[in-house]
Length: 431
Ligand code: MV4
Image (tube, rainbow, N blue to C red):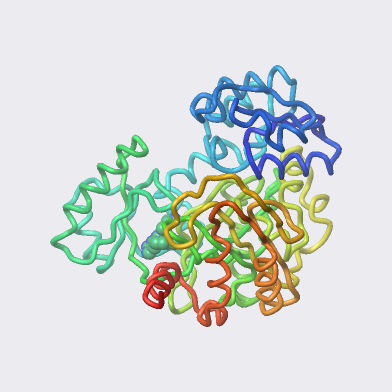
């Protein structure tokens, strides 16, 4: 087992990893920028090393600075958390060259999943359902038009190096295709240094449903079920829950099996999330895979009683799945997470100021997570907790979450990825 782990992140995920280290009896090392000197990860880690000034590019994203800290502290492993360097295959490669275990999948697999059009091809070959679309990168507008005719409009053009919604264009008519193709290519080239594009059939009002997996180094991959993440605004998730009201035990088992086999073939290791869109016929289609722990992982932890971060550490240290999970994965009850942001609840503008009162209702910081024996109990518990979550002195999204929880469609599970925009329009009319 590892003796010491460097936590290559900040904020709540850094603290989450430190908690896992403490529970496993592993020493933790925090790295911090000058802006985070007085943060909780620095306070609770066994050691802390300042790696640079406040700018991310000069601190948490500075690979030589992070690796130097790991060398100085003499750690066995690095946990990257989420965001920052978590899905940077070069960082993982440098760490392993220095004989430091990267707590995540092998760099080749991270690289494959980072190229969305390649990931799509790999999933298709293995038998995971994907949407009709192009094969390989689109060479030019002409080829894009050919595929659009094959697939049928509307289609969506996506950046291969993209993800999280950047560099996407919805095409509803043939006339607008060349312009949208050009715009997407330019945007992708500017944002990712790679203008490669691919195309999919566009699903109207989809649900976003993702599956959590864990994989050991010996080819054993286990699915821990789904999270329903349709309540998003501008690709920022606001609320997540598990199970999804739309996923039956049979569908959960079917997708779980196909993912286990596929990811084992691909050589996936550690924790990962496979994103699907669900159409109106309740069919799931793979869209992309995230090769990291995610913000919303506690929702899965609550219904499965599996500590995902401790599992990541054990699996990276070479433990076998049966020694990590200690039995079959069960799904009990229902969990919901509301992300509480320091933002105006309608305008979504950042809200800075001195917090004069802060009462999280028996929980941690900015993510409010509850579970109940079923969705009804989880909803009542979340409403109660939001009522008792008091933050004074700044705006937060707490009032927004209270209104979502009271919405009849939300309560009935009638949600998709366009819910929030429609909900906000409705609230503005009422006001
Ligand atoms: C789509 C789609 C409809 N059809 N792909 C947005 C983020 C990226 N991960 C994929 N996204 C979408 N891909 C097809 N073929 C609609 C979206 C989408 C979306 C997906 C999940 C959650 C919120 C969303 C909001 C707008 C669009």
